[in-house]
Length: 207
Image 1 (cartoon, rainbow, N blue to C red):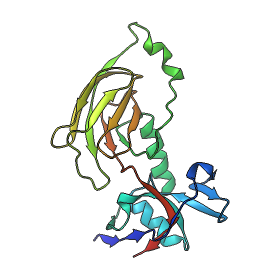
Image 2 (image 1 turned 45 degrees about the horizontal axis):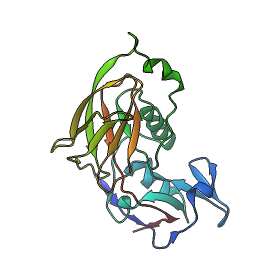
Image 3 (image 1 turned 90 degrees about the horizontal axis):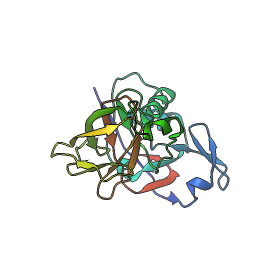
């Protein structure tokens, strides 16, 4: 049976995330002397797990996750496992579900040779789904190969297909959403969740 819960941030903090010191599971705010959890990578299960085990909790979260029913399902997961899976997915290992909140810095050093016209360049057909944080498909989202004019759009079901070289970067974009950049390696399936352009920091309140 699913258990629903809502969270809110009644009084957002105006401290800059980039000015905070990186620590485990988030950053440390020197102004209030507290750790600020980063919820932008987490599923509903993980958000609920953290908020129910921490009192007087501060976090950074996508506004689309506030004041809605977060659903806790009976799946085995943990913060580190989810975070590790997200990081691996970001770098293109396996079927990818990419969730990012800022424009990522993608290292391409190991793929310089792929830019040369040689037999080592491998073309693959990549497909997947583009959704919002509620799991709803985003028709008309743009998927572009970075540095080129090659692009495609998702259909009415949020599905897309595009031919790309290994080592190239796909840019996913949609109205009022934060762009995502994904480095293509071997995976032929790349599913992406696009967040809204607004992130809030503040004390999390259970509703």
